[in-house]
Image (tube, rainbow, N blue to C red; front, top):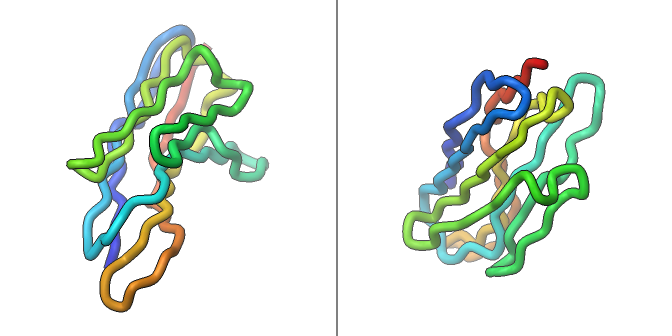
Length: 120
C-alpha cells in the first residue's frame, strides 16, 4: 500500500507563512508528479501547485506567494506559503501520481488533508 503523510497545517495571520510537508511511503517504483490541492468550504477542490518532474505549475491565485519543491530521495513534496491571505483558508491535500511495484501500475494517490486557516 501507498500512504501520503502530510504535516504543517495550522493557523496563521494574514501576511504570515506556513510550510506544508508530504512524504510518500510504501511500494513505490517511481514518482511521476507530486503536488498540492485545496478545498475550501462549499467549493470544489482546486490545484494549488504541482511538480511533474522538475516543472512547476501554480494556480494564478498563489503565484509569487507559494513555492513548491520536491525531495526525490525522501519521496517528499513541500509547499512554502508566504503572504497568506484569508482566502487561502482551506483543507490542503497532498497528491501524488505514482507507479507502484508488484503489480506494476500507475495511479493517483491522496493524503488525508491538513487544515490551513488564515485569520484577518
